[in-house]
Amino acid sequence: MTRRSTFLRSFSNLIDDKAGNFGIMAAVIVPVALVGAGSAIDYFVANAERTHLQNIADAAVLTGGKVFDGTNLSAAKLAAENSIKKQVETTTEAELAADQTLASKVRYAVTAKDNTLKVDMTKEVPTSLMRIAGVDSVSIGVSASALSPMKPEEMTFTPTKAQGWYFKKISILVLRKGATTEELLGTVTYQPTTQADSGQGTYVVNPTGVIKLGKYSNLALRMDIKNDGCDIGYKATVKNSKITCNKSTKAADQQYNAVLRTDDPATSHHLFVDGKQVPQGVKASLEKYFGCSKQQEHAWEDGGGWERQDFFYKVTATCAADGEYVRLVK
Image (cartoon, rainbow, N blue to C red; front, side):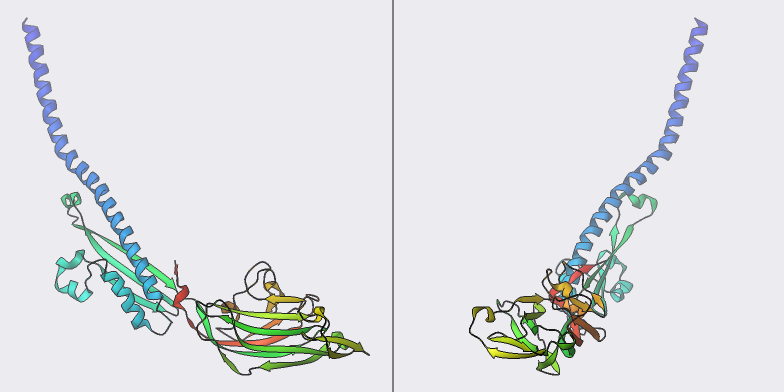
């Protein structure tokens, strides 16, 4: 009986000791667990706020980019700022330096380089349970950049050589925004006079000098080709290689045999830029190929053979960023 009572007292004491150990362990573990759980919660909140801030930055930079032409940063900046201020409360670095309670408000900067507009945004997100560890806020930051593609506003189109047996008319065409028909800005016509030396002749440029393109939604070159060597309404006769054009009312002489366009993926590969053929099956972007950065030399093959092109010209352009086609970039 005595032995059993002693055992029970010893067991009771052991339980009491373990309870004390558990209390000590709980005092250590619970705050750590709270900080860990709090960190996860605060991280989730901060990440959600970062996503929200990124959406605001993307919208702001696109809004500013739509008015950005590479020279009017102040106007583009104002548009971006207005977009930001409509969605969040903001503060300046100077205001923050004077009053740290403004740290939870958004700070931003709108900058530009060349034709790319950039918006940077930062914010201090208050924490909840992480305050136990002395962390009162988490700093988040996002950036968004938008590119306004360079677009020719005016160009100098200088033919240097034309050859071949076929009559050719090259047209410079623009489609104005909202229009359904293209506007003709200039032409070059090539009239072969002899079939000797694989075809030689003369060409006429109209107009010469700088061509103002203005605002447009599409810019393209078109080549109309008549195989007999004369324009529509005429029929060619050839004697001793000399080509003579006579008026004709025949239906076959009232239309071109082929039409090539730089913006037609089926025919754009007839164009060579600085000696390199444009890939087949793509739209040849004249915004890219019209010498915004430097003069370029083009050659156009009318279809007789790739090894010998038929129409050659040099082109330079004055270009500016076009916000109408602004897009987000990394």
